[in-house]
Image 1 (cartoon, helix red, strand yellow):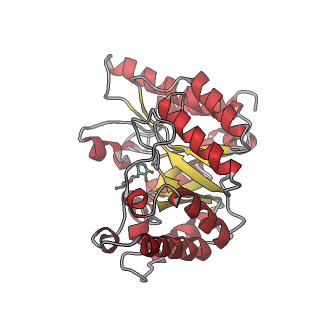
Image 2 (spheres, helix red, strand yellow):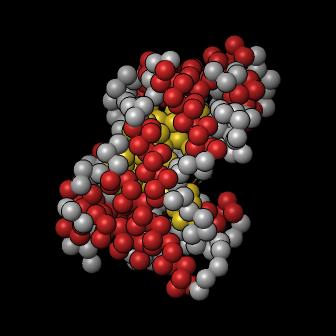
Length: 330
Ligand code: XIL
């Protein structure tokens, strides 16, 4: 049983770190055990779906804020911050948008209106917005090549800058993030993200932070020293970094079950430690917190146990390692 002073939330608060998780509406609404662990352990939450484009504007000009408003109200009632996620992505784009041919001017109008409406609706209520999600190509080795998406094809590479400017127009107070995976350590994609956001900053684009999704595996996780170096160079651009969606796949690679658990535990320990040691790492979130709610098995098509709690909401070794890391120097 977690006493008041040995859960993630109270320990992280002492370290002035926001610690949280991605949250889905169904268990938040229907599962008392989920609610109990969530409120006890976390102080910042990100909706995993209900603030995405197709959820908020399922038909053109028809916005559906009910679920997201309920989410924000529950978080506020439990003194939790909310990360908005996300305004521009190549997934969760509504059918009405993807099944029409738009001129660049029309698509610019659609995206500007969506961002102004949504960010304006939550003005002053959120701790962050993931404005643009996953805009950099995976295999990038040529500078800043962007992912081939409806937004790149329909508007051009300037859609990233435009999205940040529109979000800032709608709410000048909310920190605006670029969020991505696969660029947390050092390497071609990390360098491409760095080059893109450095150029945005040089053009005074209102971007305030970078989200490291941190969807990793026990097989070849990013090196802690590389993550620290990446956080440092982004800090030198004046940017915050947040670990926004961490999970650690355990069924890749080799090893006995015990060896896999030990490796997963070490990855959680290492990355939380890196965040605590980086002055510009301001939040640490997993993407859900109990294994049976993880997106990983569906997305990769095979079972996995990537999160700090098991399917009965019992804390795993990864959870205990995170508690121990938070206790050091506190
Ligand atoms: C995932 C959600 O967890 C799923 O429920 C949904 O079906 C698809 O999106 N990177 C992101 C998240 O930024 O929005 C994705 O979340 C996981 C990958």
